[in-house]
Length: 149
Image (tube, rainbow, N blue to C red; front, side, top):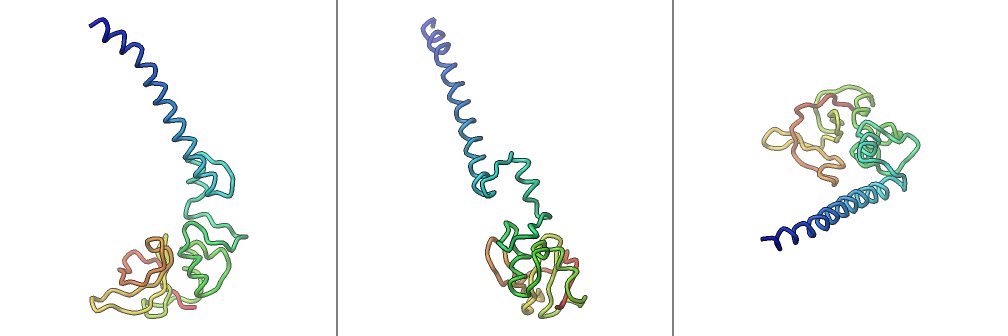
């Protein structure tokens, strides 16, 4: 029994040190991932997410942002970098009802209505839909605007 207590006493500091090293590696790895994804600028986890919130737009950059549905619509319809932000499409062109050819705008997404499915849903083509360009039937529930350019 004495031997077991001595062995545990010697082993516990080693286990604690291994756990600290693992946490340090994880934190370092997390910063490296953020470091590479933000053009070589270091941010804490909180700063990174605040900086890359969907509401922020780089107005002097034509590169594809992380949230890129608005950017994709710019490739289809034109417009400046302020349109990388999906909700800004609610100010483009003129208001219309849901129809083929209309731009549908949600708070955090934008797409182009390309058809109507047999089940009554509208077919919408958009970028950053599951991290890809997709054209699929969608509910227009929650849409904040329909615009025609």
